[in-house]
Length: 118
Image 1: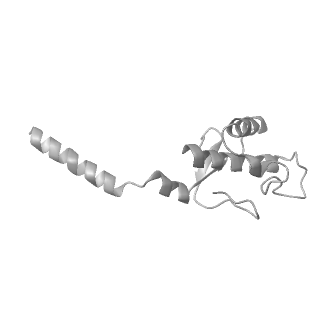
Image 2: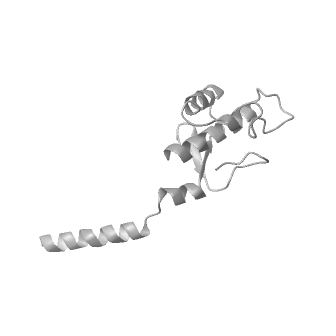
């Protein structure tokens, strides 16, 4: 009986490994962006936290992702949301974690204009 259990375990393990998707492949097909209804304070807190760990030069003044809607006031919620999208995705790419408190995974590239999400 023990020999059958070990054989069954090995078969399940081999099938599982053969059908598993490497995290790098999943990341290539997914992007982590901000939930639209998250309070501004929570979005800003995540941006501040993430940008202490990852490179956020793209969402700094003069960066390609700084002003997603040039006609809007720089303090507008849409800009904060766009900055959070970028920070969440960069954090996801760096740490392999999409912070579900403020973000969620999508399957289409949210890049726009010169702002490219990896």
